[in-house]
Image (cartoon, rainbow, N blue to C red; front, side, top):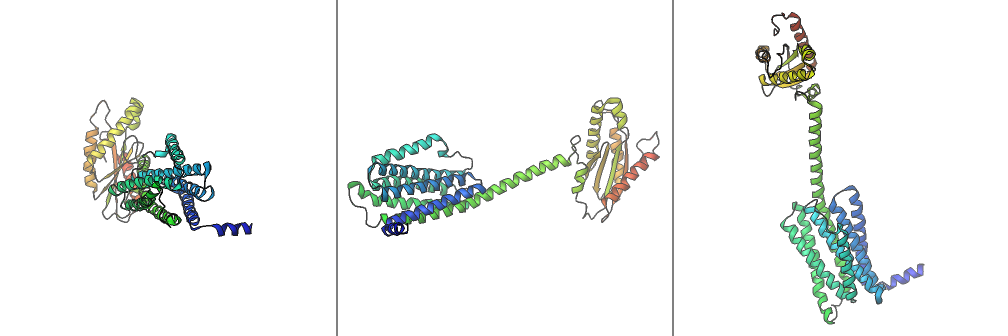
Length: 397
C-alpha cells in the first residue's frame, strides 16, 4: 500500500494537484455551508450549500476526464457531468443571491423540470464537444456571463451595504472565467492553449471561490441580523398582544387587576389619588333584568368613569362591580367633584338601561408609601361611606 501511494504521489502533476486543491476547497465549503444551514435557517444558505456541492461534483468530473479517462465514451460522460454540475453551481449561486436580495423568491432549481434542463444541457454539450478545452470554453462563457449580470444586479440594488461584497466577488469570478474564454478561443481552430495555463487555473479558481465564500458570509451576517430583528419585532408584537389579553378586562376594555403590577408608581413624586368605586345595585340589576343588562351597565359605568377623568389617569376594573382610578396630583375634593358628575350621569336611564348607584372611597398614596396601604385605606373609606349612606341619598360618599 505504501509503495502504491508513493508511486501515485510521484506521478501527480501540477495540473492534478491544482484540481485536487480546488476539489478540496469546494468540498470543505460545501460541508461548511451545509453545517451552517442547520443553525442559520436562511434559504440562501441552503442554496449556496447546494452550489458548493455541485461545484465539488464538477471538479471531480474534471479530474476524472482530464487525468484518468483520457478518451472514449466514459470521458465524454464525465465532461457532460462537469457541464451540468458547473451550470447547477452557477444557477444555485445566482438563486442564493436572489434570496439574499429578495427573501421568499422561488429558487430556479427547486423545480424538477429545471434540473432536467441542466442535465440535458450538460449531456448534449458534453457529447458534442469531446475536447476538454472546448467544453471548458463553453462553460466558462456561461459562468462569466451569468456572474457579470448578477454582479451588476447586486451592485445596482443591494439589500444591505455589505451586499456589495457579493457583487465584487462575483465580478472577480466573472473576470477570471472571461480570461479563460479568451485564452481558450485559439483551441477552437486547433491552435494550442497558452503554455502553463491549465496547470494553474484551478489554483486561481480556488482563490476566487474562497473570496466568493467569504463574501457570502459577509452578506449572511447582514441577513441574519435582519432576520433576528424581524423575529424580535414579532416577539415584541406577540408579547404586547399577550399582555393586552392578560392585562385588559375583556368586557369593559379597562385595565384589570393584573395590570396594576406593572403600574410605574414606585418613583412617583406627587401624591396619587387612589379612588375606589362600587356599583351598589349591581346584584339587583342582574336579578331583575338579567346578566346581559348587568354587563351593559358595567360597560356604561366604565365608560362614564373614564370620561370624567383625565387621559393620564389610570382606570381599572378591579373585579366584579368594583372600579379603581389612580390619579396623580389629584386631591380628594377634585375626586369628589368628578364622582358627583359620574353619579349624575348614571342616574339617567340610557338606551333602556336602569340607573346605577355608586359608592366611592378615596385615599392618598404619598411618595414612598406602599400602594397596598393606599388601596386598603380607599377600600375602608368606600365601605364606611356605604354604611353611613342615607337610603334617600344613595350617592353620599
